[in-house]
Image (cartoon, rainbow, N blue to C red; front, side, top):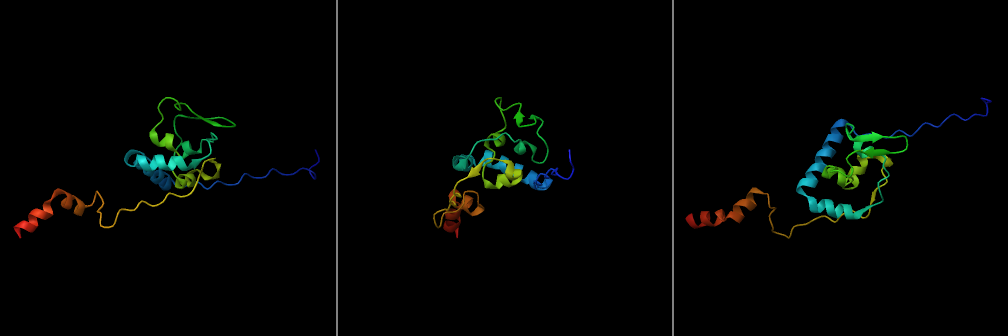
Length: 145
């Protein structure tokens, strides 16, 4: 083969991988959403477009999943049909998750979700003020004073 006519192979584009800290934060966020905000997860999944191309990048965020089998053309989860964890089933939950895997993931999301707004004057369920207000403690203090 003539070296002058041969074309050197093109290097693969470098995929920007998140740091270990970013990976941990993303995994924690996804677990939190699946556990405490399942309605958000469901609505977001309904906006998800595309199908899994079995790239396996979601299983390699931070550390490689022990159930991941890598092949030349695809990746395979050994527990795919036998009880994958909920965050794995839901991945990607939203567009933020796609940043963790780079451009190899074939999923995309339609329009961004509309922000959830509380009616004016309504307190968040978890605020200390709302707990006092809902318990009626504010009424007994007013009557005593």
